[in-house]
Image 1 (cartoon, one colour):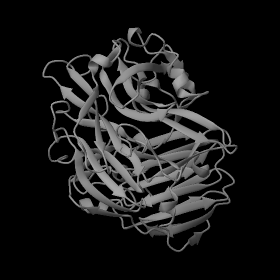
Image 2: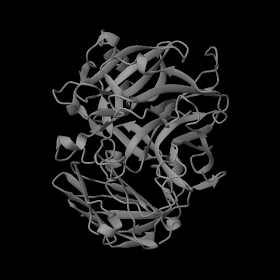
Image 3: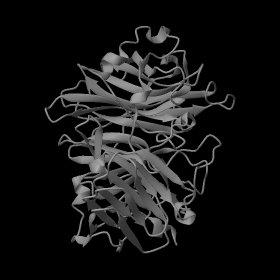
Length: 493
C-alpha cells in the first residue's frame, strides 16, 4: 500500500515529516490551536530540526496546518525547540493582556558531555502572540542556573497557569544522583521573572521512572461541583518496574489523584534551591494510566472556552533505551498522528473518564445495527457495543483481538504484519458493559465502560474495509460510517 493509504481520516497527521508531542494547546478567541513536535525533514533527514507544527480550527473538525512557526533558529534553542504549553493571558493582565504566551524548552547540546549530567542547556523560553499565530521574539526566562543542584541537565516541558494572583510553571525533571523523575515548580508575577517555589517526587525508595516528562495540572469538578486536582505526567523507564497490568510500554503516561491543592503539596518543599533532592510527596501506588494501548504518550490538556477539559496525546512512543523504536511504521514520507480530542470528566469513583469530543461524534452517518455477527465497515467508522453481560472477545479482522476475561482486558495482535511488532497489552478493567471504538485508516481508539479504560493503537491492515466481530454475551452493536475531518496544508512542512 502507498504512504497515503495509511493516512488517518479522523486524526491529525502531517503531510510530510514527523509529528509527536502535543504542544501549546489552547483555544483563543474561538480558535483552537494544536501545536506538536514536528521534524519537517524526517524521516528523509534523521537530523531534521525539531520545532512546533501548528494546526488551527474553529470547530475541531476543519483544520489548517500553518507550518512550523517555532523552530530552532536562535542561539538559545539551536539544537531543538522542544515541548511546552500555552498560557492565555486575560485582557486585564499587565503588561501584555489579551495575548497567548507560548512557553517551550530550548535545547542546546555541547560537543562534550553525555547530555544528561553534562553538556546540555535547557532554556525555558517564552514567545508572545497577539493572535496565537504570529510570534514575537524569543525570551529566555529560566536557565540551568535557576535549577536546583540535584537536577540533571534534563529539565523540560513547561506548563503555565494562573492561581492566587500569580503565574506558576511546572517543569519535568530528572535528578542527578539517582535518576529519579520529579516535577519542579516556579512562580512569577509577570511571566518573565521566575523563582523556584517547590518540587515533588514519589515517596518510594526506588524512583518511579527516571524522568517525569510533560507535567500537567488538571482540575475537574464532580457532580456536586467540588473541584479535584490531578498531577499528570509521563514517567520514563517505568517498564522496568515489572508491574503485571501497568506501565508495559517503555515509557508511561498517566496521573496522580491529589488530596487538596497541587501548590500546597509543592510548597511543602521549604528548602527549595538548597534542597539535596526533590520533596517526596507523591504515592506512586496511586498512579492511573491514561491509555493502556501500544501507542500513546506525551499528552497535554486543552481548556476550551466552554469549560471542557480535553486531552490530546501522541499516538506513538519515543525511542527506547537502545535508541530503537519498539516497532515499525510502514510510512516513509510522514510519521505520527495525534489522538482525537478526548473530553475529561470525573467518574463516580473519582477516576477520570475519557470520551471523544462531541464534534467527533457529530461526524457520524446513518446507524447500522449488528447483534454479535460480523459487521464489515469502511476504515473510517464509529462502533458502539452495549449490553455486554460477560467475558468474550472483540475481533478486528483476523489480526487483532480485545479479550475480556476475569476482570482483565487484553489487546492482542494475532497478525504480526498488521501489528508491525506490537504484541500484547493488558490491564485490570473489572466487568465490561460497553465498548466504543473509533476506527480510522491505521488507528484504533478503544473505550471501555464509558471511558474508564482506554486502549490506543496503530494498526496496518492492507484492506479497504474492516470486519468487526463481537463475540460477547448480550452484545448489541451499532456502527456508523464517519465523515472525515479536513486538513488544509497551507504549507506541507
